[in-house]
Amino acid sequence: ESESTGHFVKLKEMKKKGKDKSGDARKEEHVKYMSLIITTMRFFRAVWIFVQGLVAGFSASPIYMAYAAASQEMFIAEYAHVANEGRRMLFILCTLSLVGAFETYRNARHPIQFGQPINMAGTGPKGVPTSVEDHSLARVRSWKTRGMLEKGALMVMPFIYMVVFISTMLCSVGDIVFYYHNGWLEDDGVLSDENDNDVTLTDDMWASDALSSNSFKRKLRIWYVASSLRFGFAMMGWIVVCYCYYVDQVVIEKNMEEAEKMSKRINGIQEQVRRLSGATSTLAAMNKDELELLAKQQKYAMTMTERTLQLRGRSGGNDGPIGSGGGTALGADGAGPALV
Image (cartoon, rainbow, N blue to C red):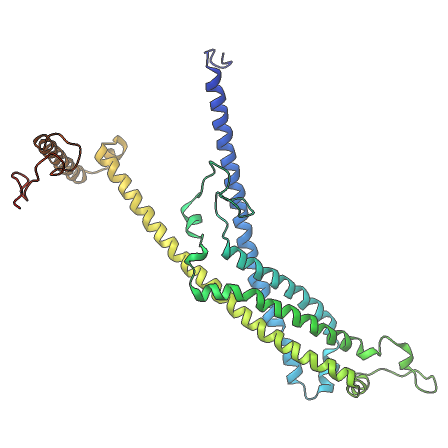
């Protein structure tokens, strides 16, 4: 017995209603969850693009300082003041860029869709909708729909930023040596002369002394090569990232336009069906000319339907197309038999 109405309801029907309600709630929660996941993925993609652009920009500053300086001694002395901070910043940016490159490739290779769990495996729970809105469906691009050049760019992107990350690690050896003035700041004894008098450490002093060391020169050469590789591959990676993002947005915009056109076409067909079926709300919104045109269309449809029924009776009442099966094929005028 229902507490609200006082009517008696079968127990099976109550269980069925409760099950349907819980199923709808589960679908709604899953849709909200997937929408949040996709929104988060778009946000992080913007973050990755921004960080990868910073890597390309900041990796150019050491190269500019190295080749714009009047001499190696002057470059070493000036760059030593920012070497450690630059090393830390570029290490963080290169790490984030590498993570972003792997995630960009993964999302392109295995795009997440509505109806799929977060691990991309399987087809998702039964009864979960496969799409929510037209714009969400239009933004999903499968791997097969991408061109060969775009696929190649997405596959190469992680390797490019892996080289950037490794070259940053190699540059860090030179950055640490530069920052600590090739050992002068690590040993207080070198700041005293033979008579134990304090010596004021100058940039020219430690730089000149460092360039006379073969070990320091070897580290300096490694820094030059690694820094050049980092700058070159960072710029290459930035170009690849911009290309992939541009192609993706162009295709998505095209899909959005096609989805909008298809939506308008479907709405137009539905409106026409409502008119032909005589929906009161639809007819009330039409003017006299539109109603007259609709009446002509309905009259024509009625005439063609009656004519088809008459022809069906002549052909023996078969359910197949007119002129097939047990009936006789009609001519072009629809009245007599066709000539062979």
